[in-house]
Every structure is written in C-alpha cells, then in structure tokens.
Image (tube, rainbow, N blue to C red; front, side):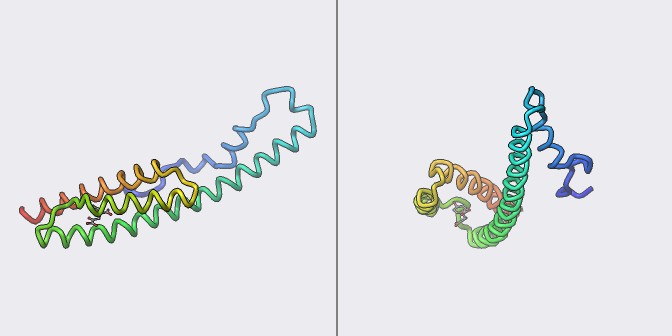
Length: 135
Ligand SMILES: O=C(O)C(=O)C[C@]1(C(=O)O)C=C[C@@H](O)C=C1
C-alpha cells in the first residue's frame, strides 16, 4: 500500500457516522416535529461536511503547490550557500498574513501559528538539502 493511500475502512461511511450522531436515545422518537428537525439537522450536517471535505482537499493541493515552490527555493539556497531561514522575510509574511486574517475574520494568532508551522517544516527541508550538498 502506498504511503498516501486512504486507510479508512470502506465500510465506514460519513452518512453512517452522521446517523449515529443523531441517534435518538430520548423520548423525542415519538414526536414527529422533533424527527423532522433531526432529519433536517442530519441533512445540514452532511452539507457542511461536504463543503469541509472540498476545502480540505483544496488546502492539501495548495500546500503541495507551496512546497513545490519552497523546494526550488531550498535548492537555490543550497547551491548558493544561503542560510535556510530568513527571519526578516518571515516577519513580513507574518505581518501580511495577520492583516489578511483580520480582513477575512480569521483569528490572526491562529494565522501566524499556521504559517510558522509550515515555515518550520520548510526550514527542515532546506536544512536537509544543505546537508545533502555537503555530503
Ligand atoms: O523565502 C524564503 O527564503 C524561504 O525559504 C521560504 C520560507 C517560506 O516557507 O515562506 C521559508 C523559510 C524562510 O525563513 C522564509 C520563508
């Protein structure tokens, strides 16, 4: 099995999980309006989860694209003896992303830690490449 293969057992379906989440354990079961509410809630949850799945797929594709660019940057840095990290560039990126986050209604502190999480991984890749250059 390849490293990236989906390991979710085929018999676990999102719709079953949603059904379990809304499983009726109270005396609601005899109230028809509560059943309609629960059915509508199930429908809405499935819709939201479908949007979330699409967004997660887009995020993964975008991240893969970003790493393709940073790998090229890493090779340039290794070839030209430049340091893996550039703190001044990072300060600019953090300031820009925090401002974009504020405009979009995303927590700027979260935006900063997300960027730092990614950049830490990029720097690790750059360091690996620099190690390879000196082998
Ligand atoms: O722009 C660079 O110099 C990079 O190496 C890319 C990047 C990034 O992932 O955005 C990573 C490390 C640096 O500290 C700054 C930025």
